[in-house]
View 1 (tube, helix red, strand yellow):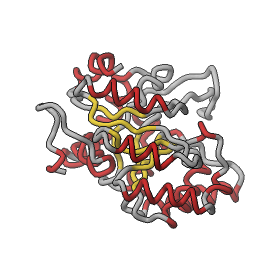
View 2: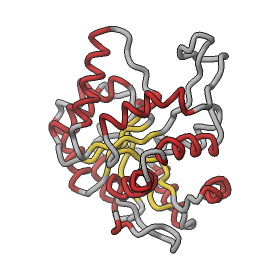
View 3: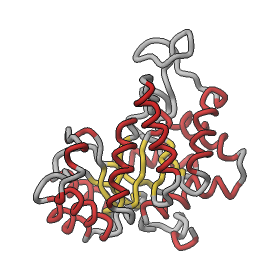
View 4: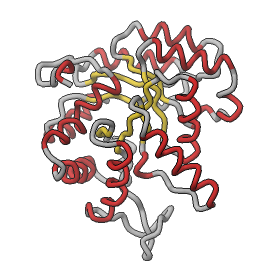
Length: 270
């Protein structure tokens, strides 16, 4: 709940949050907005709507009337085959409705989803996109799939309306330093993750990377403090201007969130 987030985040100077909805139940979008209205640390929510359903635009219109509703999340919770969905006129119409409302499309950074985001933004170039958890995306081993993933990442890096949430950084590795599903260890030092962060900075630059704690989902891999301190160390080394962009200014450009309390920065300053 927002009050729980306050307890762990405010000691680090954090004064606002955007909630990411992971429930596939459309009713939960409305419930989250009711909860958010009661706590001003919430500056926005990203809902969860099925983009292949005929009632998509009806719910989008209703939810968008609330200024805290900032967009929708799209990943594998709906089990949609985007290879089949993207060519459909209804799907693209729904993406255009999202863009016309000034809302954002969020999605977890699975390798295949990057290619889908290229295809979606080819058809709806005005749509703002935020790629979640890209630091934790596994590069495919098969050569053709690897080339497709790396090519899509580079292409998205050229598109100014595409942002990357630097979240899910910590990884579990075996004794040889390779990704492991269980056991092994979770490195805590920045040196282990620096090559990944350097690559993201190289591709997307200082204006399109933004902080995401992934709390509470992040807890099994690391504490909030460990996540925050790792990225603060990395981005501080690139200068105060980059720090401000990463921790709040880029999130304004991506989400156009609503300022609700006096210690939150002015969005117009971004």
